[in-house]
Image 1 (cartoon, rainbow, N blue to C red):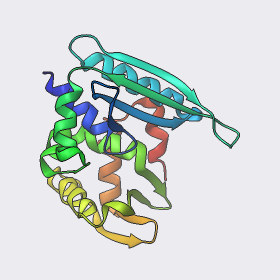
Image 2 (tube, one colour):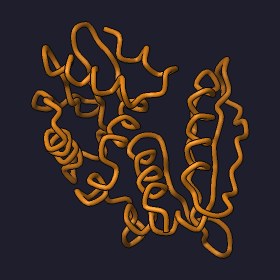
Image 3 (cartoon, rainbow, N blue to C red):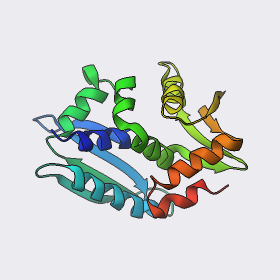
Length: 193
C-alpha cells in the first residue's frame, strides 16, 4: 500500500471527490466532477494520482452534458490502493470524516479543500463547509484540524447554505503564504483578495 496515494485520494475527497463502489465486484472508484473551465486542475489531479499510485491505475476523464453553457468534466479512477482509502472514509459504507482521516491528509488536504471549497472575499479568505455536515460536527472537526496544523481561522459562522471557516487579518495573510507553496501555479489566483 502506498500511504502517499491514500492520503492524496482522501485529500481530494475533502472537497468534490467521492469514492463509490461500482460494478458486480464492488470495486472502489474515485470520482471528481468539475466544470470544463476547471479542466486544467482536473488534469493536474489525474497526474498526481498516477504519480503516487503503485501499480496499474485505471483512469479516465470524460464529459457530462449540462443544461448550462459549459459541460462538466468527470475524472474516474480505480486502483487497488483505493480500497484502503474507502475503508478509512466510508466505515460501514457511510461517509464519515474522522480526525484520523484529516491527520493523514495534512497540509495537502488543506490545499485540496481550499481548491474545492475556498474563496477570497474582500479582506477575508473563506472555506465553505456543506450544511449536511453540520449535524455530525464535521465543520468543527475541520476547524480544529486547521488550528492543529498551525493555521489561525476565526470561529466558524453558520449560514443557511452551510458553515464558513474564515481567515481574516494576519491569519488570512499567514494562510495565503502557506497555500502559495502548496497550490499548483494555475490555482494561485484563488488566493487574491
